[in-house]
Image 1 (tube, rainbow over the protein chains, first blue to last red):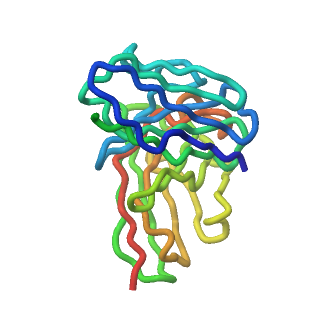
Image 2: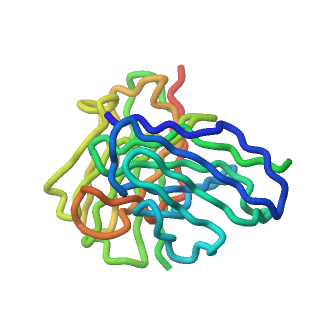
Length: 108
Length: 122
């Protein structure tokens, strides 16, 4: 089973600033990596798939990069609605599909 | 509008059973693989089970294999039959549609339902 590790666990950033979230896989997942946003009481929402492709309707301030074992989600200029928990997920080696433990992005 | 709507959650005693349903609308249900993903209270996401579009292939997490059964029918509904429930099965259960196509495989989860809460407790 591939283990996904996200860092940091909590990230404090001011609105308008850039946020950089990291995700590491225990072995290569190629570019089969997705990022999700989850707000309290809501379902996860797909932001990025194939490591760097924005899902339909996702603002351009969200970008993904990386391949193999190291991945990054960047939010270029944080808006108030971006404060949430973010999960990465690999879908290269399955089953099982595995998620990171999440990064909570909070207002500084 | 593409939509998934789960139902069937509730309180059940350890060792009991429950069947979850997920009603799909707004897309051709028979063209997409589907999964169940759960989230224990205050915890992260964990994949539970997946089924291909034609229901010919099913997959399970080790933690539920032999206790849970995933299925689907032509009424645009996905199911999860949960037997021999344990305290650690307590979670919000989400149904999710893959992004691209009919086969379970290297595909992410593009559409999610709002979830249904299952509580296993005596």
